Image 1 (tube, rainbow, N blue to C red):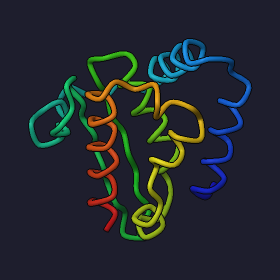
Image 2 (cartoon, one colour):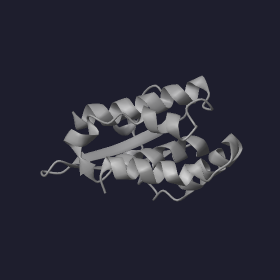
Image 3 (tube, rainbow, N blue to C red):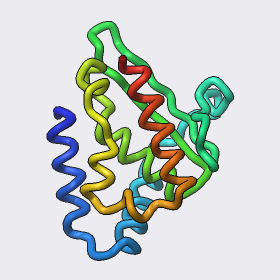
Image 4 (spheres, rainbow, N blue to C red):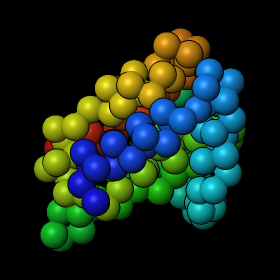
Length: 135
């Protein structure tokens, strides 16, 4: 699916949730569903700088430009944010990813205003890392 379709699917899922507590619970559930990231990738080279918690993103770009993202975090909510970013971006062309800023998604689903400044900064660092790799 395209990034726009992924965006709409994620926004639709969140539209059924009432209040930020229910949205946070859902974010945590999304993180719990992430496949386990092998410990070989939980090293400095894959660590996202600027996050208060530990976050690792493994980003691969195939010869055809398709970006594959996997990740993990030691914090439940942040792991859920990683899951949302993976759902949004992974499997799409790096050229398309480089032009689609996920911050709008987090505003639309009502999480942007609920994140602590530290989590918002970490989310921005994750998005920036993905965008840099895609560019």
